[in-house]
Structure formats: C-alpha cells, structure tokens
Image (cartoon, rainbow, N blue to C red; front, top):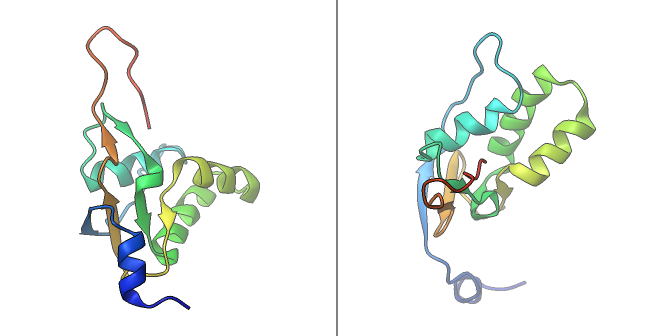
Length: 119
C-alpha cells in the first residue's frame, strides 16, 4: 500500500473541490438531463465541452445520479453504459458529498460557426 505522500506525487493535477449538488428532474424531463443538471450545477455554462473523465466524486454521489436516471429508464445496462461514458468518475479518496473538478474539466467551445460540442 502506498503512503499519502507518494499518492500526492502521482496525482500532481490541480483540482477544485466543490460540494456535490442536489439534482432532481422535473416532470417530463428525461434521464439524460440528470447529467446536464449535474454539470450545470458544477459550473458548466451549457455551451462548452465537458470532459467527464476530469470530474471525480464518491460512490454515493455517483449512485444518486444513477438512481435518478434509473427512475426514468429502468434498464440497468443502458443507464450503466451512459454513466460510464458520460458520468463522473469515482475515487475512494474524495470526502463524502464532494466533487473534484480537475483542471480542464471544461473545454471552451470552438469558434462561432463551428459545430458546438455537447456533454
């Protein structure tokens, strides 16, 4: 097992720690909007590209998002694949109800007139 100092050296990426937002869906919203609400609550403007691999959180937060999606689409495989591809990552070293936003989690949208990236 590695000590804390060797872990810090391997994780030299800068990040911001924020509280995990409470997310809910309004009547008529679909499962995919769970992550859109989550990203917006973290500070995404809705236009720039989100790199979900640079958003890390706890198992509890991850499964709260999963459960909200599952309520709308009760297909564990579909929701699981969506979360793996678009959802935040999980890290056992993150404090309860926190999210780590690694530098570069938002990439500015391309110049006007060029196709916009969506989360």
